[in-house]
Length: 306
Image (cartoon, rainbow, N blue to C red; front, side, top):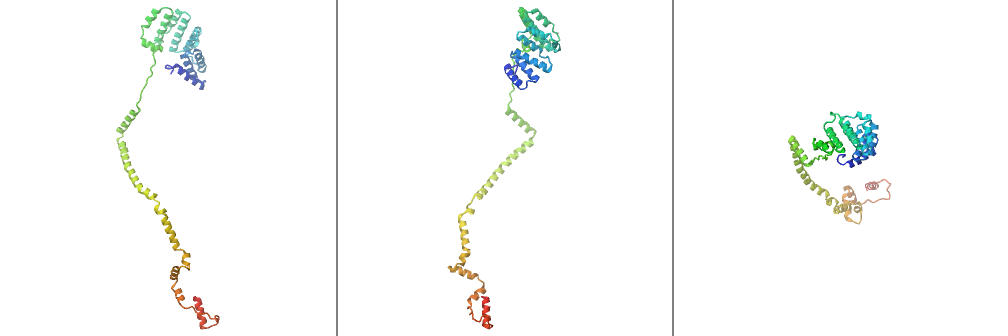
């Protein structure tokens, strides 16, 4: 977000700094975000910390320019003349020379500002780096009061390319729109074309499932009605009839002497031998029960039978 919204980028960098302040890349992000929002003192502090953590001097041009931003061009020139400057790559050397030229212009040393740019090696000043050198020379000429020369110099380069090189071109974010539904439909069509057998099988399975479900529902309806019907099993009338049957078979009613019908039923159930004995006249019991005799014997037999 540093090219689109530097302030928002700075806030994100500060959040990262609170969570992981001892990591060099976090301090680097915080320093660059502070530099792009013109917080030069904070940028210097963070980038110095990065240099102590990883020993790299790649951000030396930004540190020198931050010194200029704080109104200290002498310190910027001191950084440009330090031993660390010799360890920079081609792009770093060009950037540091541009900053040193600007520091000379700040001090009013316009000829020295142009001289610093002249010392840049031609092989280093290529592409965007060469365009930035042209821009720095035009600014040095303008600061020296040689405006016509500055305008003529800028006309020798493509203005759009120069804006891109110095970062003056408006940043345009690429936006890609995806139609999810359309992509899904295309994917289904491609799959159907590559696997026609599976698609046909799935379609036939769906068709077979529908009538089976309807038959099950039709078959389930009478079962539910019969299962839910409590009339036959829970009818109070049937329970009463069962109780009446128990009362008809009751032994107490059969043995009751007040009911002649029950006696007749009981007499019918007695064995035929007992009925014959009851029909015969009861024998007389004599006083000589224990004496031997024909009558005594018969009475004993009759008693045994009785």
